[in-house]
Length: 236
Image (cartoon, rainbow, N blue to C red; front, side, top):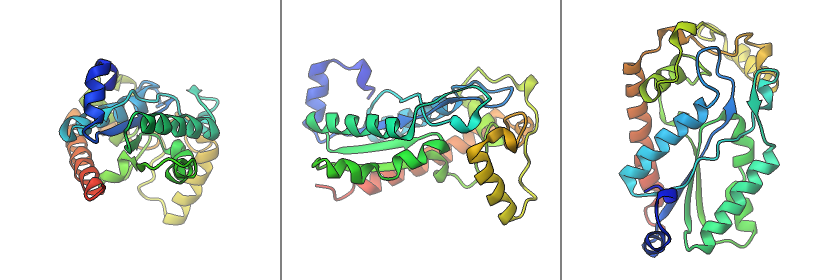
């Protein structure tokens, strides 16, 4: 159920049923020459909608701005760790005041991880009794994640008409890298993405297909539906 589409009285009825709120968090940042800057937000919004529909959660509007400073000088609209954390803490407190004490935060951007990792503890320190679960959607698929590569491009082909496949080109290919080299490049990319891939792509989007995107999405959504049901079981 999409909160922004409901009227006040309907929401009040739902909150009396011990509803679960789901907050998607994305980013606005470059995704190579072929994907829109909204890619992270688009993907996490789609997945969150599917999970919410299947589990009957209250779906809140996606937070579209994340922490993407590492993509400079490529285009990004970024907020600080402290700002993202503060927004989410205040949203959780607001949900608590509206009698919603179970919250799932679904993350769609790697750069947001630091701002999210201590969120449940920090909300608790505010004296708020709330069960908060933080997930990043890529942890629910078997494939290695990429950036504007095969995985993200395939998913976008399955959910969007914004992909410009005629502009897709290979970026950094990490398949043959040693574990230590991959770790080194990942740390480097976290500070400056352009220092490891000049076109802003990590992976090979040229092989991406809509069919593969649907398969990957089904895996993610199925696993997330199960995990979110499991984590809520037994919570009084």
